[in-house]
Image (cartoon, rainbow, N blue to C red; front, side, top):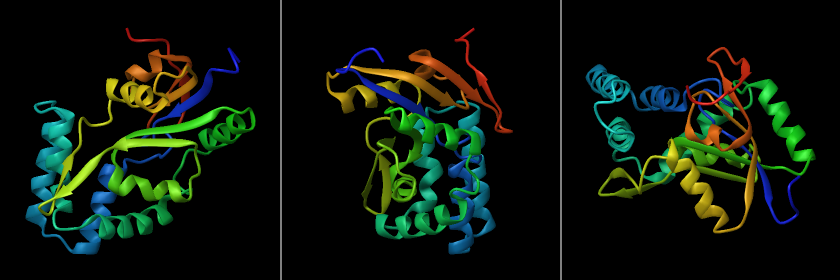
Length: 208
């Protein structure tokens, strides 16, 4: 440990990392099931997904458009569905090796911080059962029956920004970081790891 005055933290991504699926896609399917959405609506959202993958729009625009299926569902209703959804998914579909590592780090006195690009309105209920020190997700507001992203989607450099805002000038050290993408936060960690779609964990050696 570097110093008693430095917060020692471990940062975990959720989707594709701790959680072996993508909550963006799986929660969408769950809402479609609950709300009996028509095929046309589903095809429209699939198109938005393809646009997002092609990077024709930025992550903030993509998320706002993709999550239009939540229109007219107030936060209380979305969170009710989210609690049902996460009760099915957690911990069954979470990476067991990483969950064990979370517990080991807790015992070592390391703060566990989860940072996800998922919307806070449906991610927050997960952490009612999955106890960590802090979690940060893409912030939203619900105005005129639609969800808008507050600031930027919690991806890439935004994750570092959110950590800096949280610690507010206090020193922190990322002892370990895990993600399914070679993103910025891995370059800020003492030890960084990439998690594959099959759940295997390998050391991350920096951007090529």
